[in-house]
Image 1 (cartoon, rainbow, N blue to C red):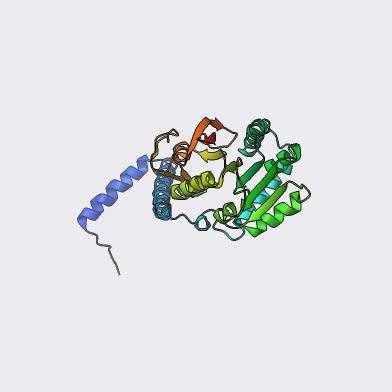
Image 2: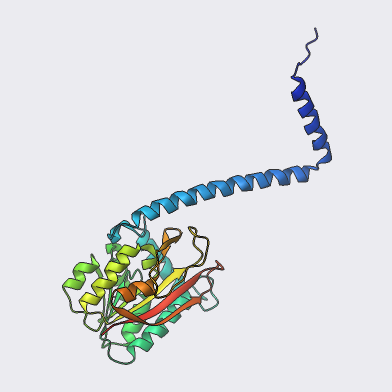
Length: 294
């Protein structure tokens, strides 16, 4: 018995052509071609996921409720605080350490020390304190100044209280920042924020700065990360011109903090975008100091 396979003539021609091509290609060339195709597929998949994240975050930009933002995992905020604490206590934590934290902390301590050394500021309020490393150092250096830090998470408060509860002029509170500001005296105080507003929408920041002005804060000092936007793929400008915020990456945004502060009634005194040892080449931290206009 003899059974012959029958194929469409066009298919045979294509098959033969492909076979001849295959003979001329080495295995490594074929493997390289397949790997390139796989890379393209992964890139397309990443682009789709990035676009989905972008659309999600552009939608939630419309809310002023800070509880809708930030860490999404259970105990994510506490996990961040523990990471910072572990990083600080690692042997060899220095200016040569990879990452942003060491150089960022040093810059914050220097900037706050300069602002506080004139003796006019009697209170510092840290919005989104997470881990009170910098606050604890300066609270002990300036015992006559009251340092307060607020965090949404009661777990972060408990952790900070365990770490720094022995410092009498440092308090960690939890809850709504606007309610807190309505029930206390902040005349002449300094509002500090770091690695926090980058997670929040512009509409919330406008509300925060305006409420700070109403509450009597005289100063705002900010330290917020920035880099090349996944939304625009172009540099972002920080100046005194109002412009839309854009999505950066990983649930973070690029805001023109300087213009927002000016609109709220503060005058920007200094601003600098400095580089740390973060592994991303485009990654920097914007720092600025603004004072309430008379």
